Length: 110
Length: 284
Image (cartoon, rainbow over all chains, first blue to last red; front, side):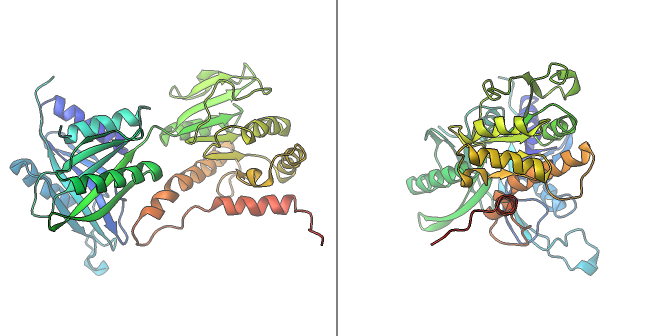
């Protein structure tokens, strides 16, 4: 799914009254799976829509999304993809990705 | 008036559907958390919202304009009110156009790939039996035209990519002649054909007074060299070149890192033109 699909899903969730979290890659350094501007929606009822790079760092962002939805406060998450290759961790791409994770409040249908 | 994340998403979608281009600019909260203030910057200069401070707004508008100009996303750090702020802008532009001239073998897979990659696809042909919508994806527009004025009914803009996959170099000539004299230079012009055929079209255009520099922007042979042979393979190689062109700018915009090589097909084309039709040696 491209980022247009993610934006559509944002509006859809809001119309349906579900509070979700939107993750946007705002800055990258070194080797990262996707570049700035990439988006993923974390919808607690539907799941993930779009991708900011799969195993390479998505888990940290999903964790942050939970707390962002709970507290209603956006924050910047720095995802380090710099684990040693021999760790067999998925986060070995080599770069650093800064991701804005923000709540999108569900609203009553207008 | 404050711009919410939903307002921004709606404006972005409107632009992506063909509405006015917009840059969404956000003041990014730190790792400690906080609201992400936003402004919307439009092509006509209109600005909606505030980042909460005059200095930040000025920097945000400049960042938004740069994003609209070059596409993609970018960030800048700004000092205001005694602290450092991270501003982020992303451009949302109307869809790129893919104009395929000649509705033959290559046009069919190329139109499919074009739709898949998010281009607004139009296919042109003068033959009724080829210019039929049922051979093409439903999202594509198929039109009949006449090679005496092939682009009469289609807009040529800065986001248009023209692929000449006609059945004869006479038609390539007709199309290129029009394109070379168009008010707006399309983003990309690619022409399929053997070396001999391309040379013949180029020579005729040079003879007709078309500037060499202008002609050098035509990509021929078209597509990335992956040894493609079937129409489907050739369509993939053309699509790959379009992706390279599209992502080349984004690669430049990255701050650093293991960037893939940026697209430089123009240099390749200039070499091809010089090889096919060497310039007369200058005397004196």
